[in-house]
Length: 279
Image (cartoon, rainbow, N blue to C red):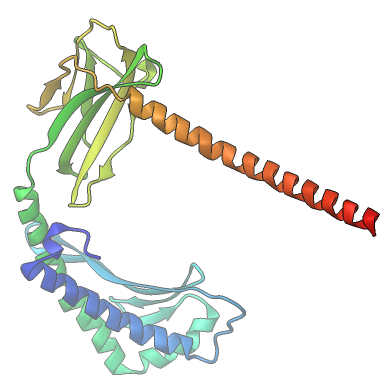
């Protein structure tokens, strides 16, 4: 499944499908040749892995930093393509026959080189342009600060939610009056989590007294996004109590079932004993 918005429609979707198709072609060719090789001993289950790609740099001229066409066997290096030497190299003895066979086939060498040197570089450049365009179109993050009543009626869970930012380290400050709070003050954080649309969110929470007169706020560091708690509390005590009762019922269900089974066995034994006595 495409993970970024630009991969889901238009030219970005076509690019994503092309990259996936070409990668699968490289994978299928290598997988078939490796698994059909009689020199590989397979005792029980085995895992064959493959990865194909490249890294480029434009500063200011295009330069290929690294390419990789590799196969792994049970989590260990098995066979890889050296772009500079223009040949396949075995990492273990069992891969040597395949290395010899592939290096003697000029078609395989040319196909692998062309894929890494042309298709991969071209696709990475196009992907980068889509990424840059999407980052420019990404909406500014939003922030909200709200409170929910805790099971303990004297406590409130105050939560700061910042969402819609690019998935990089986001510095979110949580303040009591003018003092910034940290873990040692009881501040809890979910860490950065994906939203599913290419952006991320971050939650920070703090347990406070529902009768506090202190001022709380949160916001994004080095930005103009700050929200202040309005003092309102979402009363969810009833929902919590219902959820608690449901949990209690489910926890008692196995005990009730066990007692019923014991009673059934007891009645069966008594009935059997009575039948034996009468006979």
